[in-house]
Structures are given as C-alpha cells and as structure tokens.
Image (cartoon, rainbow, N blue to C red; front, side, top):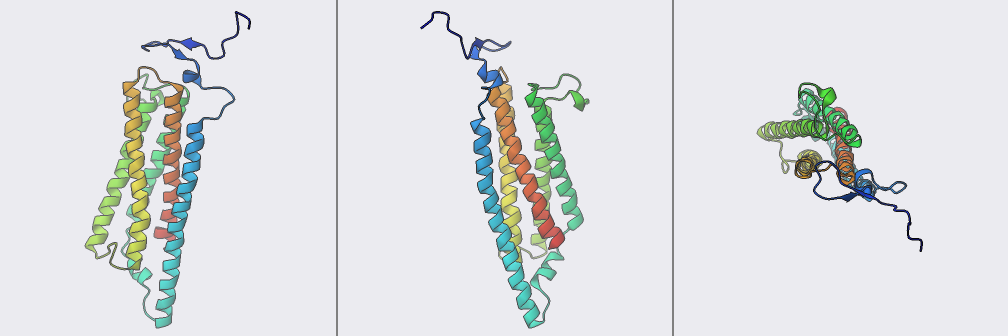
Length: 235
C-alpha cells in the first residue's frame, strides 16, 4: 500500500467548533442519498394510507346516512350537522396553515445555504435564517391549533361531539387526528430549534433534519387541504 494514499474524508475544524470533524458532516457524502430523507418519505407514505382510510370511512358513513335519510324522506343528518360548521373561520385558519408551509420552505432554503440565524435586523425577513423562519412556522402552526380548539369548543356547545352521532364521530376523528399530527410537527420544530442553539456548528446532519421536518410539515398541510375540501366545501 502506498504511503501517501488519498484521504477520501478529510477532517476540518470550523469556527466555533470544539473538535475537528469530517468534511462529510458539513456537506454530506456526494452521490449517496440521505437515509433520513428516504426514511421520512417512506414513513409519510404509510401515514398517507392512514388518512386515506379516514377519508374512506367519512365517505362511507356519509353515503349510508344520506341514503337512509332519502329512503325515510327525512332531513339528512349530514345536512343538519354541516350547517353548524363555520366555513369562513375554517378558511382563515386554513390560510394560516398554508402560509406556515411557505415560511417553512424559506427556512429550508436558509438551511441549504448554511444560514442558521439572521444576518440583519429581525424586521428584515430577507436576512432571516433557519431559526427565524422556523419560529414563524411554529407560531403559525400553534395559531392553527388554537383556532381548531376554539372551533371544537363552539361545536361542542352546539351539541356536536365525538359520540353525539355518526357525523360527529367522522368529523372529530378526521380533524382530530390531523390536529395531533400538527402538534407532533410543532414538537419537532421545538426540538430542531433547540438543537441549533446547543450545537456550535451547523452540520449537514442538522440541515437534513430540518429538511425532513419540512417534508412532514408540507405533508400535514396537503392533507389538511384535502380535509378542508371534503369536510367544509364538499360536505
């Protein structure tokens, strides 16, 4: 073996780092897919099947309920229950969630260029980094959950609960499970932001983690678009 063999993964010590680290931890290994990204996509595919089952249950219950009401020549449970929904409020809440996805993607762009924090005034979004965009995403997601809780409180006050009837079960299960997924995303943002403050160097692993979280967040946003279209518009 020659004495001066090439080093495939040289080490370096970035500014602020305590120890020397491999270059691959800063830029990744070229030509190799990130297993975290691949694993996240596979996991989200399984989550898609879960929500597909909820959609199937919703349509099945709705069709059976409407058919029974038509046969008995009475008002459909779906018609009387959907009248309780506050569609304008839900539309506003949906807009907030969709805008949070835009903020999340801007945070991804900052992570891809290695910018963790802002380089200028906090009032200048063009100089924001990953942290600022992800904090904004978190706040907008939390606002969405707060709006959903407020909507639940009003529906329960009007007599629509999880156990009140078939529509209540379908509505609260579909939107409730989505709300749990949004809450899980908020927790992921907190963990990711905490990691950026604790680590002295923004590594490739942290960038990949931020992108994986963005995949999840975009997924729950797309699922909500479908839920909003089915539950609030199509009804």
